[in-house]
Length: 228
Ligand SMILES: Nc1ncnc2c1ncn2[C@@H]1O[C@H](COP(=O)(O)OP(=O)(O)OP(=O)(O)O)[C@@H](O)[C@H]1O
Ligand SMILES: [Mg+2]
Image 1 (cartoon, helix red, strand yellow):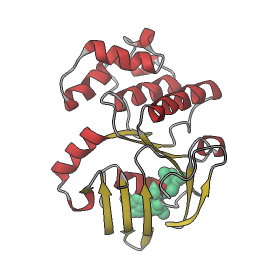
Image 2 (image 1 turned 135 degrees about the vertical axis):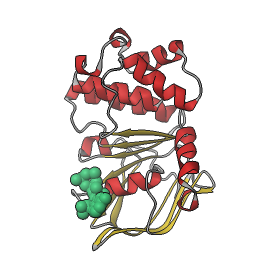
Image 3 (image 1 turned 90 degrees about the vertical axis):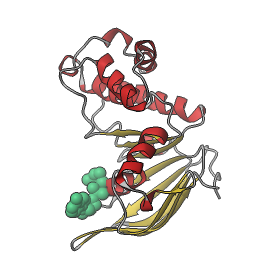
């Protein structure tokens, strides 16, 4: 059974058809990229997979649960337990340090645990920045704190919407290493990107155009037939 099974979803905003009849299955342990022009529906799709929004039509089955039919309250719990979200608009809390930002996320999952939060910062190479406020971190470092925060409970599904969009090459390399490590530990990874090099890390790339799947490419050199 696929970890994620998207069945005929559409998302309509007034006269805008942001997604039109998308079918897509993602196997457990797969790494999938989503590409496409601005406005093609990538973020809309990630919001729906990430339990942040519901489709107008169709079904989304995540780990055996039809998330398109769940209440908002249940969606929050599913998101918390199963998904690590790395979205650019998920800002850090400005008056809390890097460490405290992670401990707040732990609080929502279970119990704050400073040692574990420090380990999460260490994973993204920011142990020595634990006491810094977001304003005392570079953009790339803030992005890495967001990643550490998303990963505290080892989510089965990692969703990232342009995680390297604002990063320089060095920080992009660090972020991609984190994704590689997560994937090797068994997480299923879905990454939206405009960068072909980032997309190539995946086994498959889905290209959206005008809210539809225009094509799917299989990336050479990857274990590319998973899920077929
Ligand atoms: N809340 C909303 N209300 C109305 N229209 C929306 C809403 N959210 C998105 N749209 C429209 O849906 C379409 C798809 O938007 P989406 O954000 O998914 O694009 P995208 O592929 O992520 O683009 P980008 O690469 O610029 O981030 C766009 O035409 C957008 O204007
Ligand atoms: Mg977007």
